[in-house]
Length: 373
Image 1 (cartoon, helix red, strand yellow):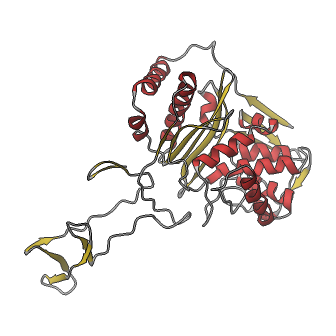
Image 2 (spheres, rainbow, N blue to C red):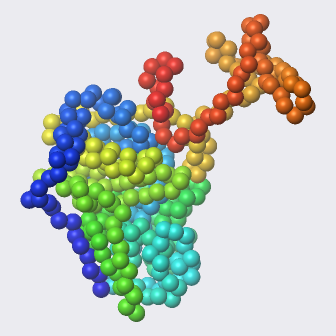
């Protein structure tokens, strides 16, 4: 049995003053900020706004940047489960599924639960054990299920996406793009069951033996965004905060996808801003805008960073070419302590070693010798 609380539109409820002010601020930002200035305010590494009817990108920043998908992966898992099983099929939780690392629903080995209830746990509560159980129900093993996931991604046009597991836990070679993630969500809306689940706030799922688990949707915008249909969140250290959702206004539907947001607070704020921006572009029939940054990312899970670390034995000359410089070590009193001194045009200058903070968000080149992270 599934007891659920769906999202209820709150047009008749009295809006709080701060929410009205924030909505006006978002509207002003959408209407009056130039597209380039608007894009530079985003801290998420990649964002996309897509028109579902046409598949056209209305607004984008780094749409084809490969990033780890985190738990947004579970959208693909859910689609394949719905296609290849019956919702009332009973699944026995394996030891492999029960031992899946957090975040989990806490299913125990040997417990029996329907596919439908596993879908609620995976999509709403982002339960990793539920996703593995669904994969095993479809293909017998997660490994064989992943092969289906990658074939499905190609079939729906997500050509820059590759999965290595059913739940989005981090690992080498698993990636997607904001553009591909929007395509996956757009395709997912074809499944009424999936669409219904991602729009549900709270549900209770019960195992065959009567153990009841309460599941709350990780998508906070269901409580605040009137136009929201539903969405899927994700987070790992390498992926950072991710989110993909659908929003409807009148007869128009748009998809919002964000990858690599530095915090959950930033994720929600930028999602709301993108929803407003998307519908504003649709209403005024503005031209699409795609913004691409020059960026370095320290993320070995996808690929090596695009930029190479500067060698201690090389410095850049004024012409931009790298020339070898001899590094002289001066011992100061003891053998253990040394200072590195570089000779440059006859003058001795002490090069202070600066700690480079490895940030996962983009560095946009605004002007000459001027970068913003």
